[in-house]
Each structure stands twice: as C-alpha cells, then as structure tokens.
Length: 66
Image 1: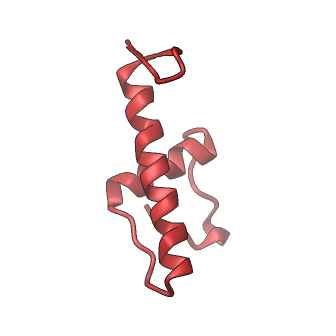
Image 2: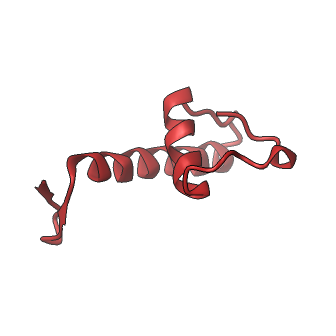
C-alpha cells in the first residue's frame, strides 16, 4: 500500500496504473496540440485500454491496437 498526496491508500499496482494513464493520456494530448504523431508504448496502450474497457477486448470497429 502507498498513500497518495491526498492521503488516500492505494495498492502499488493501482498507483502505478494511475501514473501510466496520466503520462500516456497527457502525452497524447500534447502530441495533438503540437501537431506531432501520437504514440504510446505497447505496454502503456494495453494498460490504458484495459482500464477503459474493464479488461474486455477492444471493440474492433474502434481501430485501436494495443
């Protein structure tokens, strides 16, 4: 368990997942704002996709890969 800066207790796994989402999503936002190609590492893409889908398979019509 770790304590967040707000004093909440989280497992290390959940804490690290929040960091991956923050860096990945903000990095995609910056790439869009700077007119750069967006990218994520395959592992980060998988973590974010799993979080967004609750661990279910990505719908194929989204055109996402992870």
